[in-house]
Length: 121
Length: 121
Image (cartoon, rainbow over all chains, first blue to last red; front, side, top):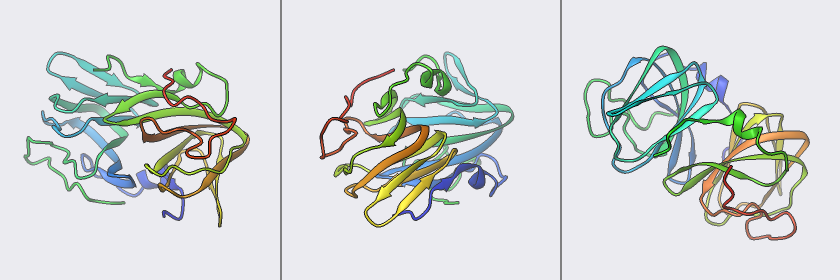
């Protein structure tokens, strides 16, 4: 059992690199991750899992092929499995991601922005 | 697909009753719920799922048979499946719960504080 509560601001203070999700908790076979983003990600999808974004600071956009969704602080959004999307943020945005353990940030797209899917902080 | 982001403060403003989790989102077979608590819950466990508490306002205590864990605002904690626990809060605490869809708040204990497990807000 985890011995202590997980302090989210403390965890956010422990890294500065962007687009590299850091795992802070596991629930069954799911991971809770923190991420900092700025700029634009790549188009991708996750065929095996929905993906939750919960914005902790700033705001981000989830782009779909037919529309954009802006997610502001204290808002969450569920990207359905298998739906192509990319994220972007003009200023740095801090968010929590919840998804199946092992989910890779770039999904099936790969490429330079692919980050390890097993990095705890 | 959900059409709009889910605004957590707005959702918290839509109910005042305590100990009755309200579902705000579904991710695969998991529910994200909001709850307001004050006072003391009943001892119970959830044999089929870990349970995440994320404190949005105030603070709460998760009591185990051998220790107490205080969870403050912006902290989260994972209660492992099958481990007996109860929650309490001296002042009203607002929290997000993440757990398998269908999970009943009182687990296998039942009793007067049992709330519907399928109530959306």
